[in-house]
Length: 299
Image (cartoon, rainbow, N blue to C red):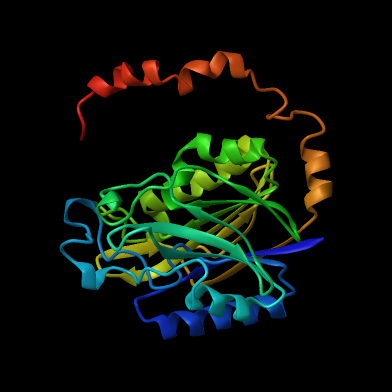
């Protein structure tokens, strides 16, 4: 059996606050026997303070941007020391190849090594004003099995999770700083339409690909953003095993990865029953260039 946890927590620009929170979450997880802990997007240094046309940019609001750190730098190494024997996924702002390039990134690590890292591919609402986009998805061998990483808006794209499932992912960690709606937000955050979308995407991607889906998220507020929490663990049948809802904390589930796969995929196995020859136009650049939706007016 494997114990998996997803965190709902609030991270800011205060690095010492971040590390203290990481230590507290890891300690809580360790006390519950957790083998794999998924922390939110931007857990080192916080996320952007706003999005859209007035979002943070490298050129205009450098002081509000999260610190850009290196995968092999002291900031990530400090997380490794905290993690110890526990496998941890964590989000951070990764320094790029030049001073004006940065990536919204995640790493999969424990105290002994970094198993893999990922740079966010899909960018919402002007996030490209602050971050460069990644160019692919990886799946990494870890002590609990093969794990894929994605970040926030990636979950809205079925192709992202499917690419990792086809590469043998058994568990997909989806790290988010997913906010509530910016307009007509619900008074009850759990009933907000963007909370609904966050939860619906999580269940759909788990069930689409028959994988364990571990969705962390930020909660509370930062800048103009109000986060929806709802960290959760979902099994390959789309069943939510644990959920924090809008509160801070850990969603923890004890799972049998091998046994569950054997059961869930014994009958209807989505990856086996695919018909790739029918889907070819989806990846055809000529078709994409002439797609009818390109002529639709934007909201």
